[in-house]
Image 1 (cartoon, protein in one colour):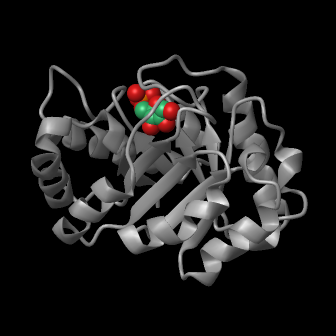
Image 2 (cartoon, rainbow, N blue to C red):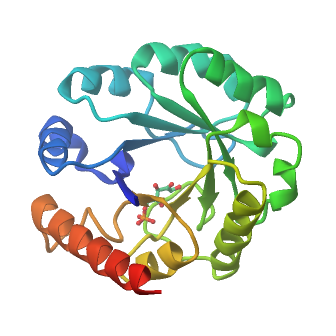
Length: 228
Ligand SMILES: O=C(CO)[C@H](O)[C@H](O)COP(=O)(O)O
């Protein structure tokens, strides 16, 4: 089952409540919160207060992508704000396994986020402590960037590794997930699509129209894949 997760940093900040409620009515699978600290990435975005204020509006899982240094210091803060899943970057925390385990210990799903240039070998000794891998398909920090071509190969390689080990770890992809790239990332095994300005938050479409188009694209793709 391929899941759709709106990237909240791409929503209209002045109409955040309205956007969450409308996307909830369109049955999105998760809400993706990009958290940036101006250090790990050169930008600032959402924090725990925003997450906490939106939490009562929906039962859909909240996924926090921490693009911050020393994320281990903020696991409790985001857990209390209502996160159901948290991903941290391999380079951002000295004791990666401990940080991932502490996410799980608080009852959340633990994810590791990999920049486009971060090799898959960082997964070697944490397979048993992760529930999902977030493969960044752009360098994190900004919406509206171009898909990095080699990231496409990485999705397929990761999918093979997960299957080879018979693990149930989901592959999440984020960055220029568009009508053009979605069929390709799905073919390679991506299961969680973070949808931002490239597919969902479009100037010429309502959120409802964009969701209908995305769902149609996904169901057409699934039918095609089932024919193989
Ligand atoms: O993580 C992100 C930026 O670091 C955003 O979620 C993502 O890039 C938004 O999607 P789009 O690329 O379609 O604007």
